[in-house]
Structure formats: C-alpha cells, structure tokens
Length: 318
Image (cartoon, rainbow, N blue to C red):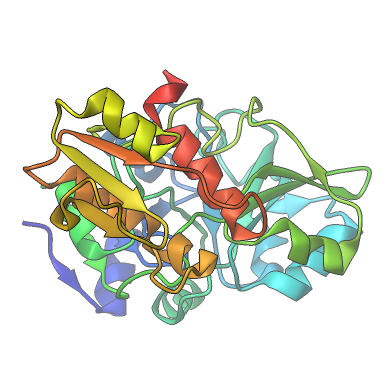
C-alpha cells in the first residue's frame, strides 16, 4: 500500500534521499524525483516502464532557478514565462551539464515548467534542485488526475503520494520550443494556441514526430479498445460486444446510461478537458464494458487538445 497524504516535509525528505513522490499539478499528477540525480531519474524510467528515449520534463518554482540549469534563453520565452507561469506550459531550453543526459534522453535541450498547484509549489520552493516528473502512470496508459488513478497503476515503488485533490485542468502541459525566437508547439495541451498567439503573435505547430513527451503514436491509452468516429455507426459494428460510450454532452438512446459517461452536461470544452482522463479510467474499469466508443469534439480552443488525446488513445492508431 502506497502512503498518501499532504506532508510536504516528508515528501522533501524522500526526494532528498533520491526517492520517488507522486505530486499534484493543475494538469495531471507527476511521478517526481531529483532531476539532477541519475539514480532517481533511472527509477522513474524503470517503474513507469518508460522508454529511455522519451525525455522527462523538469519542474521548479521560479524562472530564476530555471536559469541555473539552462542557457541562451530566447526573449520570447521570457515573455511567455511572464504571462503563463505558473501554468500548464513547458518551455524547451538549451541545457547546462548539471542536468544529466538520462533526464533528457541525450538531447542538448531540456523542458521546464512551473506548475500551478499550491502544495507542489511549496514543495518546489523548499528544494534546491528541480524535479523530473512525467505523468504518474505506467507508460502509455491514461494519465492520472486523482490519487486513486496512481494506486491503480502502481502497488509499490512510489515512496509517497502528495495529495492535492483532483487536477483542475486534466490535460498535460503545452510543450513549446523556439526557432529564431518564434514559439514552436511540439505538444498540444491545456494552454491553448489562441491564448499564446494573443501574447506573442506568430506560432508554429509541428507534427509530433520529434522527440518530446507524448510524441509516441499511441499514448494515454486505456486497456480496452477505444474506437472513434460516428458513434451510432460504431455501435452497429460492435453491437455484439458490451459497449461503453464516452459522450461529450448527451447520452445516446441505444446504450444503457449506466455504460455511458458524459464529459460535460453544460457542453463546456473546458469541463470536458478536466473530466477526460477520469472518465476514461471509469470506463476502462467497468466490468460490463468490453469496448469504448467516442467521437471527436470541435477542433478549436481546448477541443483541439482533447481530440489529440482521443486520437492517440484510439485503436485507430494501431
């Protein structure tokens, strides 16, 4: 049984000894260890069963600290940091050698963010090193937004879960690099493109072929097959199976409501984002469901990020 609580001092003691602590953020829970310690980082990769070629994002509580581990910071990055930190934004910088290569999968760059969660910010304030903290789940599975999701993934190996309640946003950070001082979005996330453009103007969006967290073809995936498309047509195709439906804002009348979960009864994309992963966890653990059906949402604002996660979790990506 993994111990769960809100003891920041205990969390610090564990991390100081190169142990692992699951930490809350506004996006998802992270599995944290000292980003500058190879032993701690190696533990993260091993317990998550994460490929070593998938770099980790580092977390701390101030831009001043980040400057100790990075160099050649673009001017636009400073603007973005001023606007959006603490918040669901990861910025890619050139790294100094104090960040070991295992943390960045041998890249010369490192991703940093300042999470917007009070208990984690207080913990980070007390640490004199950053935390590497990918999502606190088995690699490729649904990201955790509640402590019970973490204990569904792990029975041991994590020394402590710092309980911060349910995550407020529910989708990972937006990852931004820079090319000639222009922001380049490598992963869609909870910080939407429209808000970034309002602050800095031009933005480039690249495919997820490059080496960044979440760039693998399949990710955020339930154990049960998830099919995307026209739900009624999918129902006809798979009606010989026990069907669960991930709905946006209304139930379908051809499947028992007990087997359906609505993301937002208010038709809110923001609420749908917050509930996406927790809803997938529920459907994946329903004994009377064999397959999950769903459809894409509006391709704008946070809907674009929700669709990105649904596509990556879908069986259509096989």
